[in-house]
Image (cartoon, rainbow, N blue to C red; front, side, top):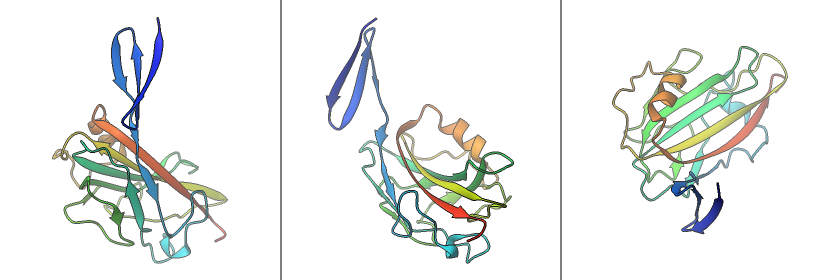
Length: 175
């Protein structure tokens, strides 16, 4: 079995036993509110103003039909804790404004039981908060409802992700 790496058009492809499989394109995700790995501002916290930070998105695949945003905390003592689920984002979205949802975007049920952004609220220590963007080859998934949770969304987008990217910030219980 031979494995060859082929570079072109900003994507990498692997040729394996005559099958060509394209790797997901990396989407850039950043925020003017916090640097990669730095502390999230207090106004973004659940006990603060509970306002989502501004996000900048770039390098979305040209053939993307929609974007999905999932924000979660893998350091929660109860397991992965989802803070925000957003789908039906236009693939031309370059900014998600602070505290706002772009037109036509929809929100799902987070681990707090709300269909909105709920910011960091670690019970102790410092937690990481990942902001992940997924580019899809489908315009949107009408099966999603406001009570759709992270597992339902990930199951539905499986096989449709053509690009992804992430950034993360931290927040401490003592902040």
